[in-house]
Length: 189
Length: 122
Image (cartoon, rainbow over all chains, first blue to last red; front, top):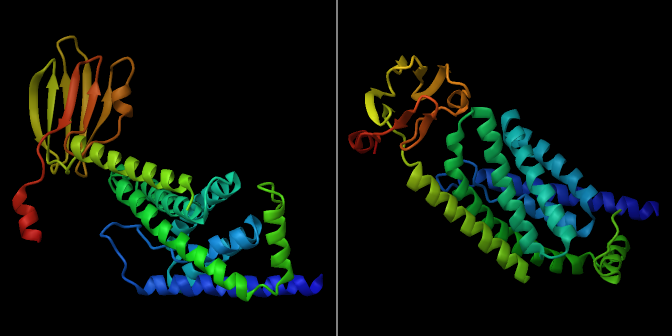
């Protein structure tokens, strides 16, 4: 039992590092559509993987940690605030869609992308008191679909290949059994 | 890829296009002037770039005070019964308007940005 908990902690650490590396890579790419707020959302890849492998509690933890760490490492307090708003919106939506069981990883990730951008735009409206930011919303939504889809495809592939590599992890395996055993009525924790 | 994923992508893309269309057809580029009309008659045209406070009074004594500040126009005060015009957000984009129905007063952003400005910037 202790052994498995330690293992989980280690894997969570690896995935958090993964998220941070992705955040760093993203901060290096001057990736811009000329619309503020549009991001690839690479770090969401790690969040989606944890959400599927472990559950929402672990994913919340990873999400908050990576926003805070990446924000202070590669940005500033202001960015953390924006980021957190986007992350919260996107995460709630992803959990809801995943729980509904009607969507695949791609759909869940897409919702994440869309709501990440929408959430950030909402904060921007609130902070700048400029309703004109709504002009960016269509572009932000469309971008969310595209980036979310790409991240979703990547997450699916990662789970297939890394899942094989980690197949000796009994805790993970048990979750897999839990998930597929009782159709749809999976338990968290 | 489930069917619902496709529906989600299609729905959001469609909503984005719709929103884009609405924003760009009805609320396009930032305007430079506002036109104030009452009972369909033009009371005046004012520049949004000049700070200004304008007071309009109709023949029955109904008063509206419009403020132009920071490139936006908003209704600061009105003695109409509902005061809905004061609650409407500040306008700056072409086509946006503030309407005071009890006083039949309409403030609308009319002229867009001068094209030369864009040419110089680029």
